[in-house]
Length: 334
Image (cartoon, rainbow, N blue to C red; front, side, top):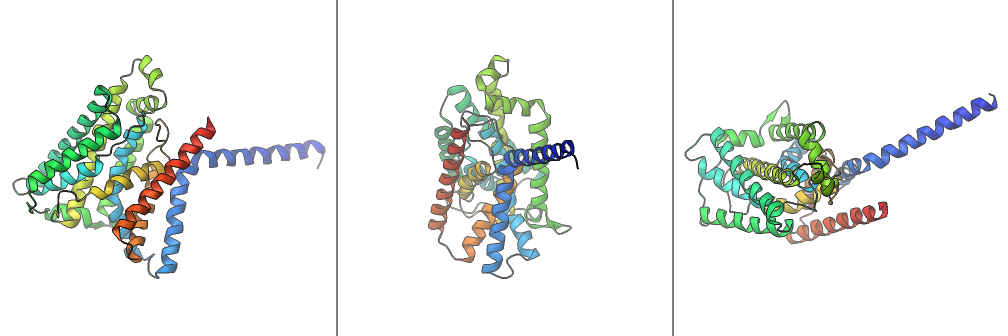
């Protein structure tokens, strides 16, 4: 081999290493949650033989579906920028559970689904108007909306059971097709639709632009207020859909705050999945691994009989660590 061929070989190796480094830098946020999920599965199998059975994995996907659907909407909101987030997602799902149980007494499932999605989107639009038009900080606006939603739910139920799920909704929430949970297939279908909207539609381009540089987007003639309001509407509708699946799983509402526990994991999953809290960067693919990781972590807590209070502490601590890590990384990049 002559000197020229050696140089060519060295250059090829350098180019290959550079490509690998660029790929890792580009996709590590997406890959990391899946890696954490796999590690947790291995630990679970070592701690409790049978943890990785087919039946458990199918059960895990069923449990993960409502949270996964909710994170899709939260991703749109956080991508829209201005440090937006929807803290009312759990309350929206909780109200959907209550209202769906009430409406199913007199209406068919198709009509009820449409009504619930419209109501959820309506409350999302209310959040968007408050944040984007009025100028209320996102955390304050959506937290206030959550209190409003819980109040409506409490007024409707009055502390009593007001209805039940329909057999068809229960089948959708718990049934399987070719071994796969139907609710999981719905989640994956919506995931594909969300990915298409973000990457291949004008609204998706506007959303990323608004999150990356709101001022430049506004100068370009794009209404960042409308983009943000639409994101909140999507989050509201998908949170309501998650509530419907939750009702189908449990059949009878046990209170007006049934989905309250989804709020923190929803936000955590989106951030852990690689979506920047400052907006304009990320997507929905990474949230899949995050949702699976957080759902399996919750079942892991159940295996070791960890009290609910400590679960909240651990989840909150994990969220703080995630935010600190990504905030620190963002500052280093600057």
